[in-house]
Structure formats: structure tokens, C-alpha cells
Image (cartoon, rainbow, N blue to C red; front, top):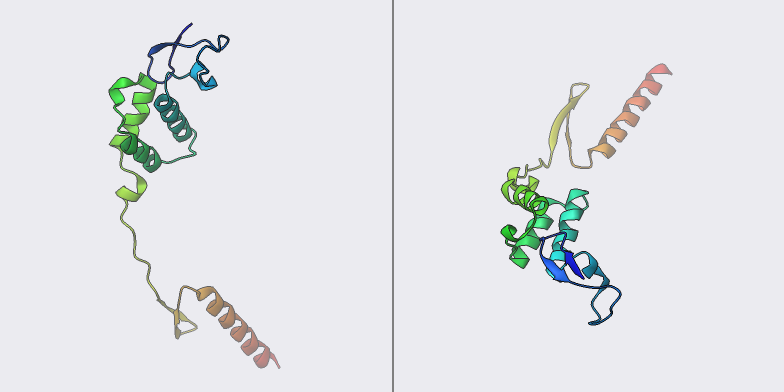
Amino acid sequence: MLRKCVCCGKEYDYCPNCHKSNQPGWMTTFCSQPCKELFNVVSAYNVKRVDKSAVRKFINEHKIDESKYLDSIKKVLNEVMETPTLHEAIKPIEKADTIETKVNNVSETETNSGFESRRRNKKRRNRQVDIELR
């Protein structure tokens, strides 16, 4: 029985009822393992389970030639290969180790764990208010 691969469009012979060559069940849809794997990666990208860098890595590792595939697959491959990934497009921003702030005209240096120092300062201010109220 002739079938048409949903990834590359190639016609191939496969009969799920004949059991003549003990072929895998996925051959009802794909002509070969590489087509099956590429289709799975492209589908995962389309539903946002993988990002462009994962698809690019797959394409480079398997030396995919986009001209062999159907237009729907070509479209995704072109999109992935033409547009830089977020990590490539944006250079990393260096995070400052300390931030100089002024609270009640008192200079203080906050570190990355500045939340704790802010909490301590709030407690100090509350204690000062309690003392003034007495």
C-alpha cells in the first residue's frame, strides 16, 4: 500500500496489516526515522515545548536539508534559522553587586539579599517609633 510521508511528501510502501517486514507502527505516517524525529521536533516547537535553540541544535546535528521537506516544515525551519534566538539577540546585563540607597537621610548599602536588610531597617524604625511614643 502506497503512503505519503507527512514530513517530506515522499511516497513509500507500507501496509499495517501485512506484517511482511515487521516495520514499526509510525511508518503509517512517516517514511523514515529522520522524518519522524524532525516532525516531532518541529511539532514541539509549534506548541512551544522547545525553543528555537533546541530546533537549531537538532538541525545542525542531523544536517537537515530543508529543500527535501514539505512547505509546512520548510516554513518552520526557515523561521528558526533566520531569526536569532533571545540569547543571541540580547547581550547579558551585568548585575550590580551592591546598590546605594538612602532611607531617612541615612546612607545604606544593600546587597543581593537586600530584602533582609530592608526588613531589619523596618523593625528598627518601628522600634524607634515605639520608643518615641512612650
